Amino acid sequence: MAETTTGSGQPKGFRSAELGWPELDRIPHPPYRLPLLGDVLGASRRTPLQDSLKYARTLGPIFRRNAFGKEFVFTWGAGLVADLADESRFAKHVGLGVANLRPVAGDGLFTAYNHEPNWQLAHDVLAPGFSREAMAGYHSMMLAVAERLTEHWDRAAAAGRTVDVPGDMTKLTLETIARTGFGHDFGSFERPRPHPFVTAMVGTLTYAQRLNSVPAPLTPLLLRRASRRNAADIAHLNRIVDEVVRSRRAEGGGDGDLLDRMLETAHPDTGERLSPENVRRQVITFLVAGHETTSGALSFALHYLAQHPEVAARARAEVDRVWDGTAAPGYEQVAKLRYVRRVLDESLRLWPTAPAFAREAREDTVLAGEHPMRRGAWTLVLTPMLHRDPAVWGADAERFDPDRFDARAVRSRPPHTFKPFGTGARACIGRQFALHEATLVLGLLLRRYALRPDPGYRLRVTERLTLMPEGLRLRPERRTPTPPGAPSLRAEPADPASC
Image: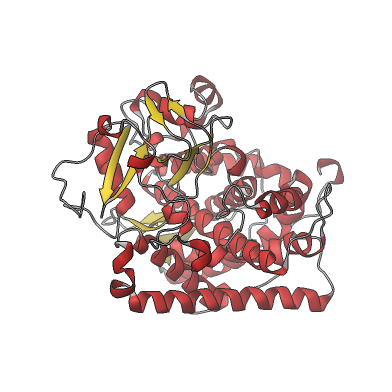
């Protein structure tokens, strides 16, 4: 931990807000602040993000919270966030929650500090892995993994059983990124319990969040057992990834996937290559980030489809019309599911599974002409509240309505009001991968099943730095008559002209 912490035990780069906001007193905070403890009355260690959303609704578009003497500024107003998106004045800040993942991912793409050279090196080496040509190459593997999901759901449908939606979406997205990016099969659908990689990953994410709610001097006392368990989880993740890399080296290379790029590709300008340690960190980053957020997005979308049968019927009709009985949709056919994509976007609006991103001032500046910030001062953007700003989304912003994302509505909104993948140069490199995968899977499931919700279920959101619907189960029913060709999802040969 020495490399990632200061003498006080706080992650590198952490600055309490009073050090960077000269007029902090003008920013509102919750009532009943306690000496030393801060704004802890009524706060939940399990749902800190949802606590912040509650305060945002009463305190306004910029507010602050204090936890054990550490002061945080939160923003969500559309005008403030648009100003923070100015890359000439603001940059990504590796905030406290993200910095807590540094022992896991080091200077990987998501957790690297701006001054660390490996971020730009890895970005430049790996960006071609998300080109249109590369995406088309991943499509058949996405279909193959989706077939394993539908085989599992077919058995549940035949037996009249419900399915564990978040659990199954996690299996699906882990297998998808593992196979497309690293040529590895975790065998998730053949296991009665989650793969140990998932168990260790959830453990590290949960521990990183718990660190935010415990005073740094008390961490060794209050989290002694959790800290030992976290160290074991990190060691397990490292062992799994090291084995994946060893296997690839022993095979002498793969099919030009992300792992091949990490191991074999030099920077086009400098000739520099990723070090073995950084390869491990990037693989962990992609395996975690490449499946955790997408599984959440799919789970929320399936919840809303089940709760809104009129939306599901409209989306299903689009799938039937656009895919027109094709046994397995081609790469180009996925982008034609415009209404299905709106369903996904609206789900990401209400519950962006990466629910916040932090921005810091490159130099002394004034945020939106109103709030002075010194160089290095930072703020956490609450994406779910940005996506609920009534000035942008209307008085019914809490209502699920995919038509908010029809082309005319999108053009009518100001820029920087929809940010599920972050912003700027450090926005999610794999966003097009995630959107293609999620749209494809929703289309396949809508075509094959009617989704029956539990009438007594009420959405509860679990937090582990990312968001996921808790306890969501649906009952899939095979559609009758079965669409032509639906029993197999194996990809048809791609039309060279479409690639």
